[in-house]
Amino acid sequence: MRTRPTERPGGARTERRRRRPGGNHELLYGRNAVRESLLANRRQHQRLLISDGTEQHARVHEIVQIAIERGIEVKRTPRNDLDAMVSGNHQGIVLLTSAYPYAEALNLAELASDRCALLALDGIADPQNVGTLLRTAEITGIGGVVLPTDRAASITPAVINASAGAVEHLNVVQEVNLTRWLIRAKDAGFWVVGLAGDDDASSLFEVSMQPPVVIVIGSEGAGLRRLVRETCDIVAAIPMAGKIASLNAAVAGSIALYEVFRDRDNESDDAVVT
Image (cartoon, rainbow, N blue to C red; front, side, top):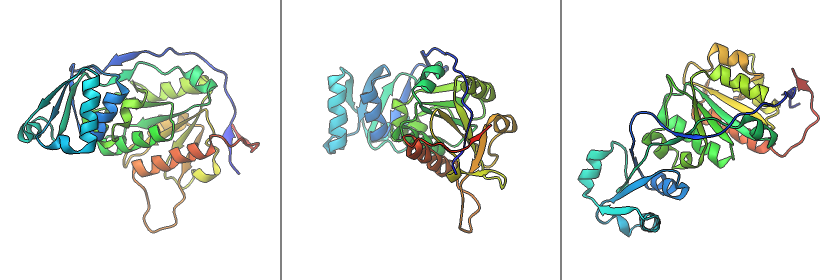
């Protein structure tokens, strides 16, 4: 049986964009990250740097053409210079652009009315895990992502590269107090499912993931913080049959997001959890 909690009345929030504090430009690297940033066209792109010979690759040629169409300067740069600019695998291409455009707020009432699903990350610090989760979030049609401002990874070039550029197409907000934000989301009509590995948690496969829903993924190791957990309507765990006791945050969260994707269009008359 799949379960879901009672519905809640809606509220209203506005949506605006803001630049991330601390610096007015970033160096994006990697072919997918740079391509998606150019296609999303949400930033102020300044210069595309490519190493000699890289333009022979079809993907890089496509990126250069997009940059030219956008009126962005394209400059050939020695690979050693690119190596000195960024620490990650740049694949011969770097984009000088403005800071990541966080959304200032999500319009929770509108998103709830549209039966959207949202993703909240409770203190996940590893850029690879955050990038993987945001890539899955974009692919599965998540309507917005919430990150804590402290003790968690922000949207850095490393996260963008790990997400294969998917972050460039997502609405991401930063919140000082995730618990308070979850309460606002519940007041707007969302119900909240926290993912945990506890023995007393409900099986993820027996919990309704039909939107409007917020999926909360806890940090590596520590999991959900106490107040965040207590704010969740349901705490769910992924059933496991092997000898390994846990999944990492990115894999577990991706499974949960695909449960939302699978349940999104499935109406149900199952029992309600209050």
